[in-house]
Length: 148
Image (cartoon, rainbow, N blue to C red; front, side, top):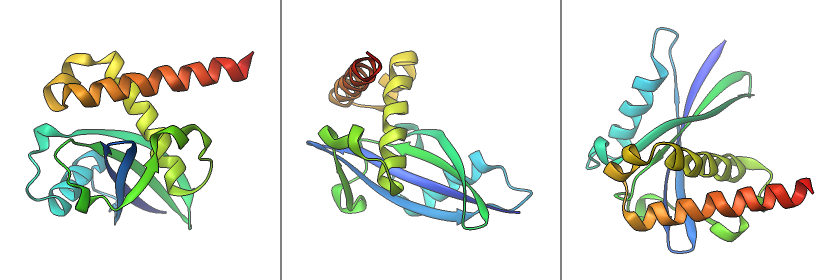
């Protein structure tokens, strides 16, 4: 069975989540976590990896292969490097495609930032942490309203 690594590089830019997606094959003997960091270094050679948060964001079976998705978030990514956009206010309404995968990964990143504040403070700006905190509140509020 074929396996691929899907790297979503993202950051908050104003009112949007800016992102780009890179896909690479993952050989049977490869460690996916190591491979995704190598892909990050290839696509963003000036990025200092300590200034990025990299975490698994899920997997799916697609096109006769297993796709392992990772989110790499850094305030150091430039707007030109991240051509795709999701309006932050629309994140909960996106249901299909790579935009929905990215939106879900960003919500998971926001929850992880609350669970591991020290790790995130070392890598991200305070303004980013504020937006991530708001994302968690908005999403959890929307979820509890829907459950009522």
